[in-house]
Image (cartoon, rainbow, N blue to C red; front, side, top):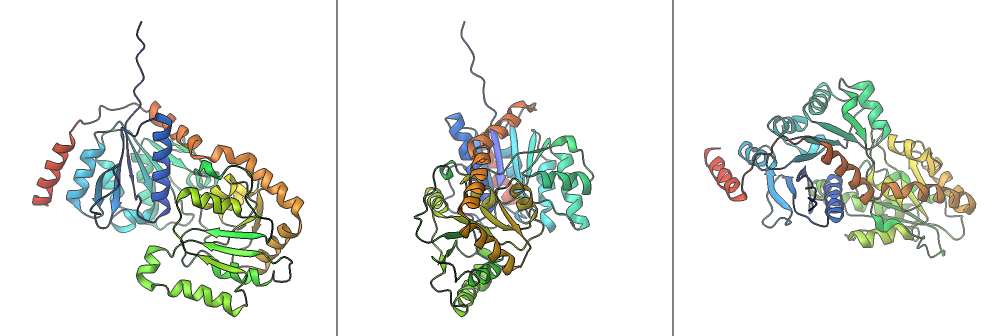
Length: 399
């Protein structure tokens, strides 16, 4: 008797997407890539990217570029998404059109297939409009995913919604982060990476390093990443130059290093594995999800982080040290402890490594696939790409 192969559900992803420099874009590309690897095929994993202006040659998996705030563009995006079995939306207020990203509600209200939303931001003190958008979004979608227990508790205590619709799936991390440390053992390396801009707490981090110049060998502090595109657009290189000037004024030319290279994922993973300590000096008290924190844990690195919610949750395992916000003295003290107490640092690294395997993208993708496979499809609206293009042309003319 011939066995019938189970057809995996097609998924339409809605998010910013590379080459956009944004955490949600990176997240979506990594999640989609891990799903494709599990399936052995990229078929049926299409992306509707959210853009402010269309690229002439988007990546092949991008089926449509939706122009935020454009009603005819939204109509085409809805038509395309409704041809899938499931729609997976990444949500943050700033990536959708309208006040506080309210256009996400216009999108979801027109979808006719099961929809899953992943919340990257859950504010403790939202404005009334932000609160209403999130409550309506959870109500209108089939399933909601958050990436930390802190985010789940915030939803349950501060928002009116059905908690049974919400589940926790951790942020993913590159599998290439696993493995032994690549530290050269000469000078301890403290590493911060990600897009550079105000709010990342780099000023406090640089000041903290000034308190560690007496340690021999003196630690190196590497700040790896480009200036955030929005900061670059408004300030040019002035913010980065200000950080360099601060390091120079403190006599840290041989301690603080700025590495503005754009690295592919494999190269980034190697740089993370070369570090001895990961430093997350963020100023935000709201952050319930940090991809950088998850990657540090997945790489088996001891972490020093300010007391933002996701750090307090993940480092309570013993994988690092939490310090107060904007406190260079406490930050320096934590780094000094790890540098001068290798046994403690190794113990924290071991804790991080022990929980890191559950954070790699293949494991995370499996959880999203499980959700998609259990949702009851509501007969996706079938349409060919050519029909959608005709619809797009018509809507562009009448819009």
